[in-house]
Length: 469
Image (cartoon, rainbow, N blue to C red; front, side, top):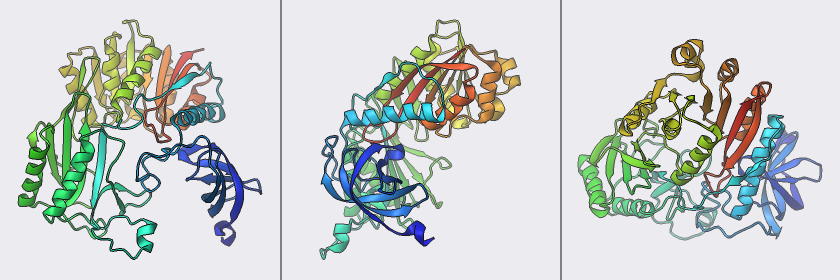
């Protein structure tokens, strides 16, 4: 065990590449791979390892001898401590290059599939302030930087309203300005914190399960709607009304002001009652004239503008003529299903989350779409021969599974019914590649398009068109 945990130092190491999960890659003198988290490809650094395994080290750069020409100056004062934007020190054109490279490598090395000419990755028009949903946590013991800990200065106020430090469930970094969500997000968060301090509201302590203020969620939309949801640990009617009235009066642009009383151990709201205090219990997003009603628990793509581009690519790959029966697997709230419905004969959506299907049906009715049907259930159980018999043989399948990809039984069922085309949308090209390899005997990849939904991060979406051989 001592050999596995022994720290080593290497000098003048060149950072060669960017890899999965935002890590950068170098080579140690002994030939092992070094995974780093605070460098950019092209840097030359000294490193200190903190984990050793048979084939690799995990390390941190301690001295920078040469800075990469791929570097750029991070715009956020919290960069390097907050884990939200790991690539903010890398120029955007280089971020796109490495995202494209990761997708291509996964498809060829994991999927072992032949690829067509690769369409260049679609970058995001907005590289900052693109998220429509942010969740902030309150804490009575904010995260302290190393400089603060080592200084003799009075640390003053220890309350925080911000983000969890990566890998630390009980440590919150106080955020002054976040560059991910447009105004009025920063103004609302900072005003709420100051009001809470001025009026002696107790910020939550996760370890001891005490305090009043737990979390705050802010959702915005391209229609101008704004939703704020405050989560309290306990009912304190006087303070609750004080805070909510302050928000309503200070930010009249809030169209949905809601709250939750959550006395359980975790912050998850999906099993909690969300109470509307002022305005509506929802906001609307709009896309090509379609309206999508979003409540506090709804899933909706967090980059609205780029989601529109993603859905247009998906629809284009499907190549609908108006005569096709389309199955939309993992339909969520039915956004893609409704987006393609006007060019299809009929769309059948399937999703495991009951609330999502309820929202899908409601949105379809709201939009006057009559050629969609939605069904709830675990995909590997619902998507069976009886389901196909009842609803028809699909001409095209669109599938947008979670990060884990499709269950092998779902893949096998697609192969059994063998529609003409499959459009596979994925937020994880590694599991997408795994699934594509299983389908390679029957289907050929004829188009592939990566889409950057989350600038300044390592995340990337990919859309694949499969056509029968």
